Amino acid sequence: MEKAKLLAGVLALEALIAGFHVVSRAALDLGVSKTAFLVYRNISALAVVAPFAYFLEKKERPPLTLRLMAEFFILAVFGITFMQGFYILGLYYLSPTYVSVIQNSIPAITFVMACGLRLEQVNVNTGYGLAKVVGTLLTIAGATIITLYKGIPLTAHLVGNHKLTDSDVVLGPGFTWIAGCFLILANCLGLSAWMVLQVPVLKKYPAKLSLFAIILALGLIQLLVVAPFFDNDLERWKVHYGGELFSILYAGIVATGLAWSLKIWCINKGGPLFVAVFQPLQSVMVAIMAAFFLSDQLYTGGVIGAVIIVIGLYSVLWAKSVEKKGACDHEAETRLTRHLLDEEFTGENL
Image: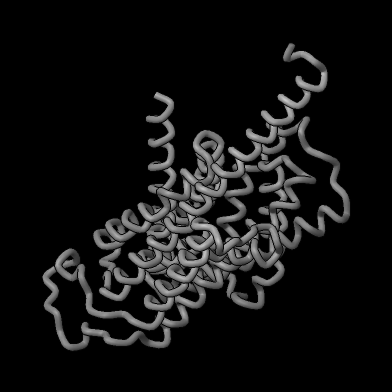
């Protein structure tokens, strides 16, 4: 039953995030202001997360210091302002399917950043060390293929009686396609930086839910400061339709609040590697949802790049799994050796 619950939880998590990609794109198609969408999303998310963080971690929160607040502010820059800003801009130029596919490269990007900060060690003389490097290179290659090669549509039959014409056969992507890919890659960089920089912060401030609430609040303040420079038309900030309101509430309450809490539960029960293994399933869910609800097209270049990215992703995850198991075995062996030496020294083995 525990395994069944965990599996159901991970599948629900991927479905919720897949729905977020599709709902966000639908909001843009309705004409929702990109800046207003981000602000309203974080307001609704903060309204959900803050009360739980306050009451559930009331006795666990360490005292706040000026240094901690400065570190929280930097986390908000990468994890909210940059990450969400690049995401919504990239989604404007790309389909939800390709956004989700490119985001599968996040583990590899995170690995590279962690190596740069010496939070991660690379030993190419070992099998898992070589697998990390190869997996990272494959992920970069897959993202490059998606960016520079589009191909022909594969899902035209799913979106109506569409006949393939010469204009549909796209051998090379346009400027907006390339711009969208680079924006989503920048989104991945922001999210990876956010995760890597959290490691030392969580050691000093282990109250995860409270940390997330503070980051949401600081990110919201940052967005409100820069918002007038991107969209100062008050009319565009008004919510005119039920669909716009639904998309905003889904993005904030469901995708940010509920999905984030569910992800924490899944990681606590199954570990981060178990959760990450299911990430490519999200791209499949997005492709199906987007094809039926948004008439989204899937191209050969995207499929080729997606396959390469997934292979690279699993290569990195496999390497991490083997490395973690080796570290645990080494730690257990060290503890056993110390225990035997202690017994021998005290004469308890007699």
